[in-house]
Amino acid sequence: MRQADRRPGCPMLWVMALLVSAHPANRLSAQSQDVILATTTSTRDAGLLDSVLPVFERRTGLKVKVVAVGSGQALEMGRRGDADVVLAHAPDAERALADSGYVLRRRLVMHNDFLFVGPPSDPAGLRGTNDAVVAMRRIAARQVLFVSRGDRSGTHLLEQKLWRIAGIRLPSDGEWYVESGQGMSATLQMADQKHAYTISDRATYLVWRDKLELVPLTDGDTLLYNVYHIMEVNPRNAPRIKRYRRSSTGRLLRVAGGANTHRRVRQIPFRQESVRSRCRKAGPLAPGTFPTAIPTPSSPRCCPDTAS
Image 1 (tube, rainbow, N blue to C red):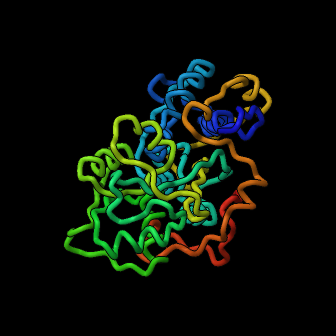
Image 2: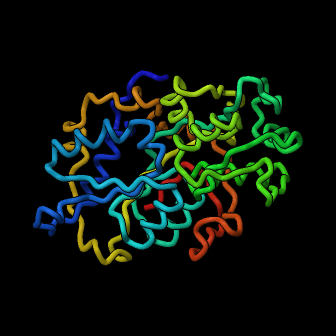
């Protein structure tokens, strides 16, 4: 893990900055002082929010209402205007919302990676390979149990993308492929109980590692690179948001200075050059994946873009 980065790329600083900028200034009642954050479950499960939000609330006097769901559901909340801020890790779906004007100021805040975990006996023979597509093909060929998130989360969308690249048609009878329909921590526990394989973000796995028998088997593929963006909901598309209060970045840096949040939760602060060098160009949204009612970008771009 890298040393703490106190530049504006630190995840704590960006999260706090976007939360403040997205807070409507004209809410006066105590009940209306809530800032609604729709976020992927991994930021909650890995402990990031436990580190960020108490500091933010203490410094600002505002309260943050967290709705932790899959990234697809979090982005859908943003599209409907049911949240002030969205924190997600589904770049293709995020870009579709940003290009359609549903969200503003989309920024990368941190990154880690995904990995395949499974039983120590490794019946699919994944150990020793860092090729995610090969891992998928071995699981399918040997029909060993695989537990999917199945919840339109960023992890689930990544998994579905890997199955497509591998050319695998998933069984409909659930013989060796099952969906948990839950967050990452619950999916890891389910895979552990069933002695099955699954794909997890590294941060959540490390938090739960000591309580599981699952072991890491495949990682290091650039396809498994995992980036998190934070974005504001466009007030023009959200009746509940009338106008924003802007705060200077310098003030927020002084408020949040010295916080080494990402070290504890195994997240790495965003560095523009390293992300661009490792990222592959993302393809258009696949049919049937979120979002269905928003146009797919006509010219896909590399994932570390920032929509304004």
